[in-house]
Length: 98
Image (tube, rainbow, N blue to C red; front, side):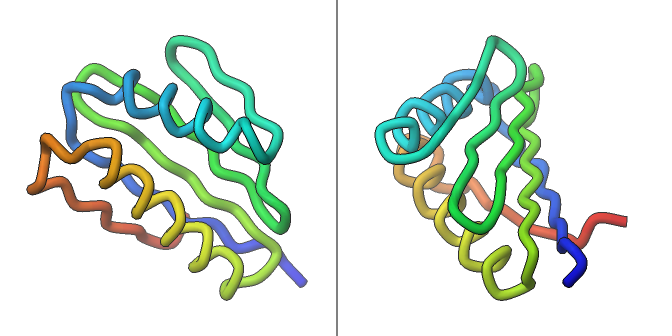
């Protein structure tokens, strides 16, 4: 089965902080890597790549199936919103990769 990929760009001035929080949080259970600008979380069944810019956190989720990809999107979305509780207006809008 072909891999499915989705993207999201989340406007925030705290992209680096949230990226590192996500990587450290999931790093207790799965393989993660990160530096000051990029991160990667390797889940069973898929991967999330993160990029921290000055005005947005860019997310890319790739999985072998649409169902797993959608589940991973939900996991990333819920954890990001939990860490960004001071930004209640934050919205994560996933779109298919071109």
